Image 1: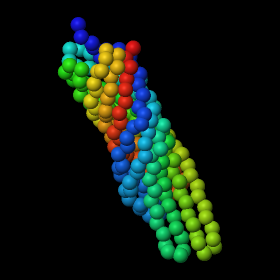
Image 2: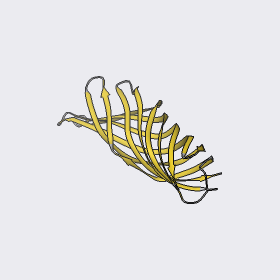
Image 3: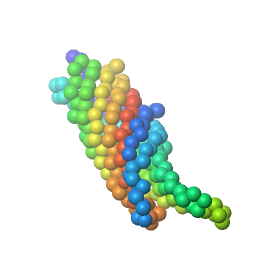
Length: 195
């Protein structure tokens, strides 16, 4: 009898690649629109799979440290310069997944909840005075994620995978003036060990 994917698994992802994506930030007084964010994340995953024939059904959760950020800057020359920055500090997902196997390979779809901690920072400079100031605030938000991946079984207990996830964290108001909505695309790779 061949190897199955049924069982508990634990894995690590380091490093993970992050695709730059749109980050809409809206200030109450003025709209900044979408701007690019870049960075990376690394962490671990755990889950359970159950295989029936060629189909695999599972649940997976992960926790990643993140350093993903973007900044919008605006200025009135000689009068004031200001910026609004947004940073994702950590990300955790709780997902179901369904896969189809052929030999040691598997394609799968996945989706579920996403939780992330976001920090917004507002900074400004008035050169004529001269004065500089900044303030920041963090909040943890619950959103959703969906994606797909490819997994390959190298040994009965060892698999490697590459996966794409779209993450959408809802709008939250930070620093009383900055309404932040965080959404992006992530591509990450990792290995899993089945127990």
